[in-house]
Image (cartoon, rainbow, N blue to C red):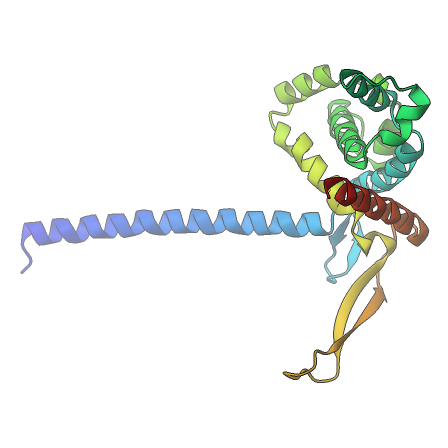
Length: 243
């Protein structure tokens, strides 16, 4: 027969094991939630239906279209405050620039961050508006001038009412704008690479790129290529300046 001390120790071990199991289940649940969020972000603008096909996710799709449209627009005609920032920065370097001279000096990263902030604030305003959460209503809010939205007041009201500011955090939108603008999935294609021939130690297999058209496009291929030309040019210019 087991002693009282042995029974007590066995019970304590069982409780400890139970706590470890609960903690492990919690960690696995958190990890699964993070993985699901990463997967959602990779196809932001779409969702997977019950037939395992990509279909348009109406509200995020409006934000995707906005990203491509605004990057194109702001490259040609940057927001006045970004141009003014360039002029003020050059004043600090004892260089006077006219407004027209400052326009081409607005960086792509500044434009992307501006688009991210615009999306963050307007999506908060959309939720606060209490209008039906439809693509048409979000589109109407996105189409309004950014100056119509008092950003600080909207952030404060959103934080007080929704109590989940991270769901529209500026950092998340910055990451999303960069990710979306480089993802060809929005042209309605998925690009795969497959090896040609058998690999060997002496020779590496050639890769063939295959495009599969299997879902609805959110932007035209021309618009996607135009935005990515701009992104590549900006990256080359930045690399040249760093050298």
